[in-house]
Length: 128
Image 1: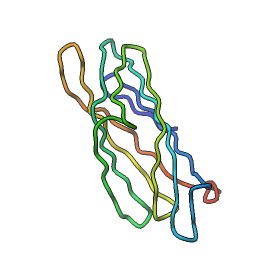
Image 2: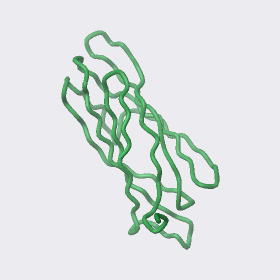
Image 3: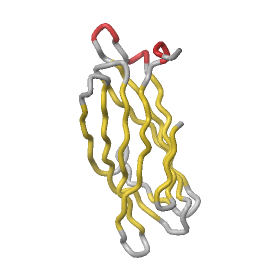
Image 4: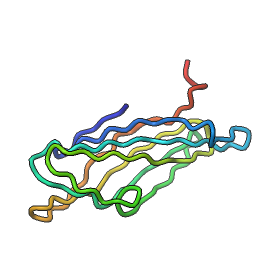
């Protein structure tokens, strides 16, 4: 699990290879990832947007941007957390992802970005 803390918001990510949804002979590899966002600050915040950078082992990169996460824009009171699971297809068996969330402090509307830590997408059959 990879973790980053920015402006009092902790983001932890765990990636999981999905063999049931992968077709290695067709260069289709599916990964799920679980993200936990914890508000360690003393201010209520809301997640507004996501921005992901995704690379495969051929060096091909793509970006994914949009509102919220899996259709939600969660509000986190101090000491609250939000967890979700999403997925990412790759054309190679190994890749990596990282990104940022745009957050809003609700008491004054201040917008800021928090880091999503870089994490690797590696199937179990590639581990030593």
